[in-house]
Length: 252
Image (cartoon, rainbow, N blue to C red; front, side, top):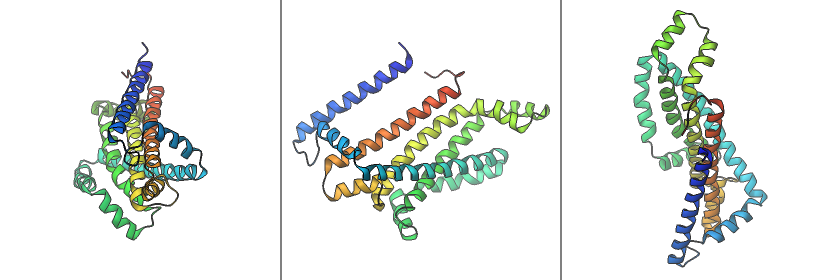
């Protein structure tokens, strides 16, 4: 069986199992206000997707997620490159990353809401969380390049552009693309969470927050499912990009 077909069947089977467990739990609870049935939630999802305000909100959330990811990726690649060139700088960044990873997200959002508006605070929070992840991934990708190979390029005076295209990218690019997909998917999840807490206007998180106020549990679950589906789709897309760009590698 084709390995891609096998993975698709595994994903489908997992989804069916989750829906079955969800349906059983719904029957046990017996209260649609607490836990709506899968069918009711799917029907609500179809209604929500057809609304214009949902498309606007979803577009705003994705735009903020992409902006946060792009800023974090560029900064992470730049700092990781400097860290690769300077051992001292690499060691100095370690405690900074430790502090950034230890910051409580909810507390940071509340503080940023004092300094920023609800539209930009989620972007700042997402950057603060995603940047350390991408930096670590970029540095790990760069470390995959053999030092002896780099030395040989210097000895034979290989141009920098050729080093990047024919040495660095083929070796570290596959890992970096994979980790970037995971980081972007996580940034969407984090962005929605930050929007919920800050009640951002015309956003996916804002719609979830509004449905909570009106106790519309089917809509809340439907919007959450769509956010989860977006993250999964992003990871699958980056996995496809990884396979297309690095066909010479074997991915099981």
